Picture 1 (tube, rainbow, N blue to C red):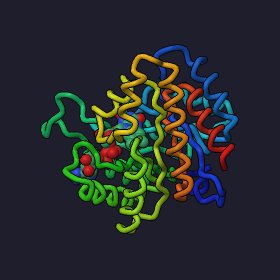
Picture 2 (cartoon, rainbow, N blue to C red):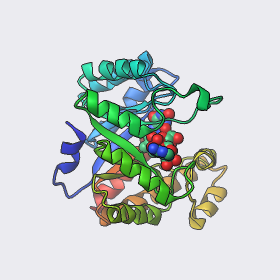
Picture 3 (tube, rainbow, N blue to C red):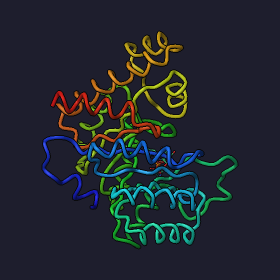
Picture 4 (tube, protein in one colour):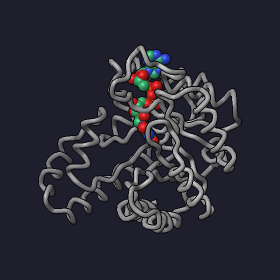
Length: 285
Ligand code: FAD
């Protein structure tokens, strides 16, 4: 099913989706985790990619997830790639019956400069290319606090709008810990006449290291009230995990009461926290 149809369904509960990444360990472990998550009836599983957007390893995993009768949305990056390699990658994905793709620029590789620019500079170039060549539905990334390279949110939204003009069908946000920042972003997009589905990215906190890593790579505010807890449970894994579940549950409840159309969980390839959060919100709803 296409993103357009998935988010057009008139449910009174948001569409749930799960993000996983190709692990360096055996796939069976990840497939077992996905089996646990399957019972929450996800709209789809999104599968991240490395630089270049493809790789036989990801294709093999994509098929294994499809074998579970689950819809898969592969991520696809374009920076540093030629038109030919992108077209080959997309065709390969299309042949597998995939209907949706997350079109990304990707992070700028080390040593990349004006001199070795290839065919795609920004995600909007990839969106345009995919829309011209295929009938895939296209998701794009959005940043409630602005992308790290962007001077400000206003500028970032200007380019987000450009991705939509090129044909993007849905926006998947960067994770956030300050739910009000997402709600303010939602309002700003509406003011900018951006009406395609805006899907909230939720990452349950599992460790201090994980939070530090994420917030060093992107603009993500950590509200004071959770900073203290993250410090408090820095060496107490069990309490940190439970706190992460409680906090993300609160985030989801607030998002649901503010009519959020989709909740996209960055699962880190583990079902435990995400399934607990979903048990909590389904009980409440
Ligand atoms: P763009 O939309 O191209 O934006 C990049 C920057 O350029 C922004 O600052 C923007 O404001 C600016 N910009 C955009 N268009 C223009 C223009 N026409 N002129 C001037 N400036 C412009 N990375 C991976 O490698 N693999 C993944 O699987 C992956 N999955 C992700 C999933 C989600 C939900 C999110 C939010 C991010 C993901 N990323 C992934 C990270 C992403 O690749 C990086 O954040 C990357 O730095 C930007 O990608 P983008 O598609 O947002 O780029």
